[in-house]
Image 1 (cartoon, rainbow over the protein chains, first blue to last red):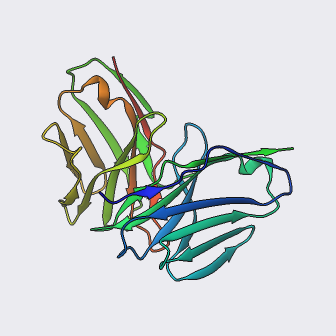
Image 2: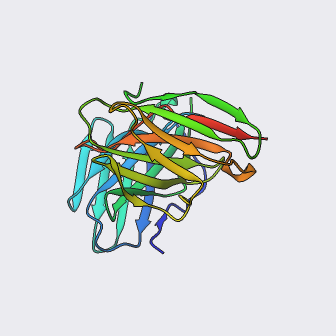
Length: 110
Length: 111
């Protein structure tokens, strides 16, 4: 069964610090990768997509993809209290469905 | 706020009852999905819908579930005879070139 793994527990970071989130996936043919943010009780909100190896920056967010290692990460620079949420890694599979990881909770401490 | 609208936002139903969850997708999008998220668990794919027919479904999407686009705009998910384990958040999503856009969700509680 194809899996998307986000194994680290809740992440607490001080305001202004960098939060680093990791995700691995098992489907070698996957080509599209996404990070979603989900506030408690709300729907997933797309924050980053990445399709090519390397880094992609968008504001305070940087996504990193390494297809050889089947690894995708997200960095949040200058973390703000409003960044406190669960971050979901998602991989597009099959007929364009998304497979999600369990998510990583980030708590930014003022 | 998401541009994909779902109604109702919360529904409580008795076990064995039928429920219909509604979604109004982004108007020019053609590819739609339903996902669910049981409390504390992963977001799980249920079904994808394109050109007025199912294009893929997961093993969760059994005979109790159905989808349709009755009037060319609304997109519905029907659960014929709800079970306690159907309690979850249900999200509609549409395909976007930048990444799929999720609706606001319906919290279904089966009692």
